[in-house]
Image 1 (spheres, rainbow, N blue to C red):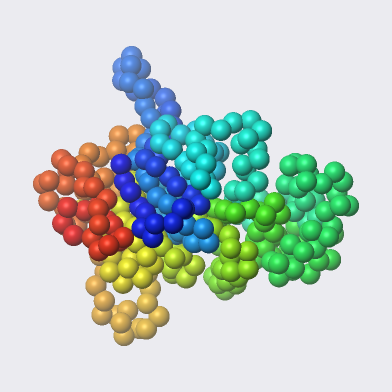
Image 2: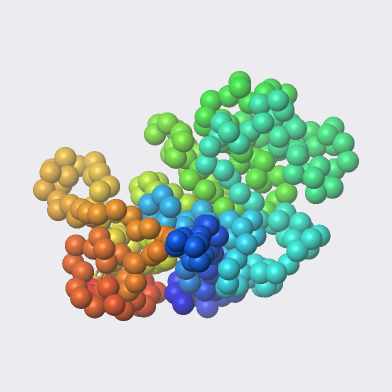
Length: 333
Ligand code: SF4
């Protein structure tokens, strides 16, 4: 089991204990006797305090989105527990789950694919209110939709337009307004700016921060652009091949990374000062991302780690404290 607590002792809004998600992936062997599973998330634990942003970073396929969807109860858990606002929600179903989902929303990555082109902005943002019975008729939602559009920096009259009239950044603002329509306590932002032009990413990230300050929302912010994740997160968890390999405050992770994988990720982030950029040491990772149908034993990073020793392929390092609440899973650091 891996632990990634903020360590401040207060009741967290979200608590994930020993989460494992495996997806059936067919059979192997001459007679098909071996059942295969994709080991998407393995033994992950963390907490997110109220009003906090936890950044979750790692390569594509490392389990970030699956972890988030498991918390939202959108994919089945193989094992582990999820607590939300003090309640164990691991097994809730039916109407209880439907009510729970009002408090936990998702902002999708692709602002183009996630808005129905045949619906006006009013219908898009009001849809969760209708689905959850908060309103009976669309007309009743107009004031609320106007408020939400203002909250995300768009004029209220935009509610009568269709998605094709908007830029990517404006569409993502509409997505955020929809996610906020039910006044959630917790929002998962799954790479919310990755599909946007670099020039408008900062605007959307700043908007998410402003909303957090005004409404006290808790975020799980998933990303692979480390400068964006640094900007918005209070703490950061780094995932590799289905496991959390390092977690700590933003400054600890960026200024004093302990895990070789985190060090390699950070060494690839461009530095604006050309003199520092020209002289700094890059840590390259060779080899392919591991096959999660048959994940490597020991430390999952050992097949690509530039400093691996024999022990790394035999024994899995625990996620342990390297400096207070700053934890990493490595035998050598
Ligand atoms: Fe590298 Fe070994 Fe540390 Fe894993 S435990 S990150 S393989 S040194």
